Length: 138
Image (tube, rainbow, N blue to C red; front, side, top):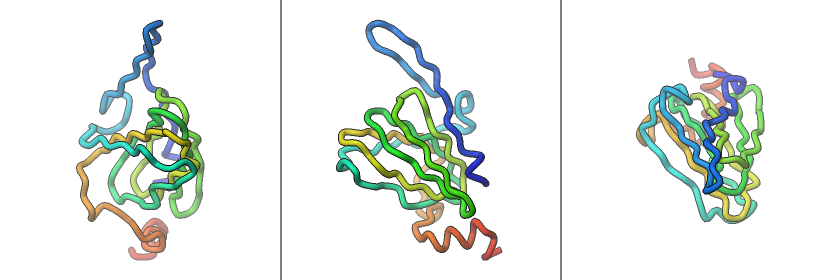
């Protein structure tokens, strides 16, 4: 997988004077069925999260409130995405190291995932991720 496979997806936005509504349908708006949803909140302003990769997991990252940057790294190239709209989701393909940085105070980051939590799917060591992403261990 390449960082070029990761992209911002504009989600449906239904505007209404009483407040807007956005929805996500697995297999429709995103290329996977949703098996898990989690969210990050009460992250101190300026703190960083992430710092891991996934072997097979696909994700859609949404800034529900506030803003943050997501830095994606495929082992060869890095790309940064500024997330600050709740109707934009960042599709993250497998084999992508991610760092969430520049978190604004009060930000809420929601993540839709293609599978349940499996510790074996994680890369928590950047050098191990680099070796696998560059085919050194194959």
